[in-house]
Amino acid sequence: MKKYITFIITLKILLLFGLSSTASAQHKSFQQMYKLYQYGSDGSQNYEKLETDLIEENKYTKLVDKELKNNDKTGLVNVVVYQDGKIIVDKSNYTDEIKKNNGLLRSNSMGKSLVSYVIGHGVCKGYIGSVTQSVADWNVLNDTLYADNTLLDILNMKAGDHNFVGERNYGNVQISLDGAIKGKADQVIQKHSIAVTMNKYFKGTKKGNKVPYNYSALATHVAINYLISKFDNAKDYEAFLTSIFKDHVGVKDRVSFQKTTWSSADFKEGNSRFTFYATSHDYIRIAKQIIEDYNSDSCIGDYLRTLYKNRITKNNKFGFEAKQIESYTKEYGGQFHMTPLGIDKSRVIFSMGGNAAQQIIMDMDNGRIIMVNTVDQHYNWKKIVYNVMKKGIK
Image (cartoon, rainbow, N blue to C red; front, side, top):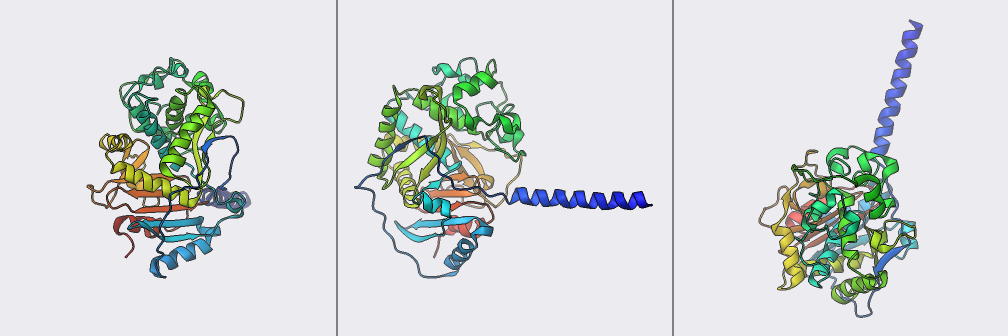
């Protein structure tokens, strides 16, 4: 009897610890940390001016204020709503880390969409012939499944890499859901150049016939570094980024992509990742320009419309959850989340999403932009983001 009681007590302790650990894992925050070693563009003195017409206090702004004030629990640090050509909500409660780095906000996977935008400019400037061309001409991808793809396949997360990396088969792993080889924490691809990753894990692999949608950090890294391989040197690539963000968009401050590796790997080996840094208003400037480009009679407009036309069904086996745009959209097109549930399918909405439910939602039809930046994912996404996306702020 004594042994039985001891067993029950031990079991209860283990169960309690397990539940506590699970809750802790679900409430895991990250720091909006700024990393050195980047490719980027300086800002401009002739930056794009943003009009502001802040709405008076209402139910929505009270909720935002409350969740920002309690960001040790909600994780919310920044909310901006751009509507009818003006910023109408602009609220923040930055952490010390963000303040220390002059308001630069880390994109996490929102940067995947910005990679796609950069690639579009690469197509328009002739560095890449077409988004539908094969990527087999980059020797780093030789004898790997990625060489069996077009650039559009990779941008649409249909590279056929689901048995090696990504959320399709390894989405239940807590560490680096989309960037660990077979879900193993010691095989995170963000630490390596594409050349190292291909040699180590992908030599002799083939794409196969059945290719599901598979959200993967590696696919994005292959795409951006494929573009970079077309440049003679890093200086020329940064000049290209400057032509996009400083000259075309008109950012005010420096913006940049973090490098994949902090080693001395040559940039043609693929040492750029998608993590992006910009200030709050520069993110809005970029999103505003993407909307204008989509609606323009231009090459970059054609590129964005091609992404939308060739969007695919996610076939999300994890189901839909109203907690972030990634898990509440039916389709995916060229690194953008598309077709939110419960919203008229005819509305063209391009969305960026990142770890901790960072979001930039762009309505290409009415020009509305909703942006949130976070250090955790416990804010009221449905009221702060989804409802505004659906019907705006009156």
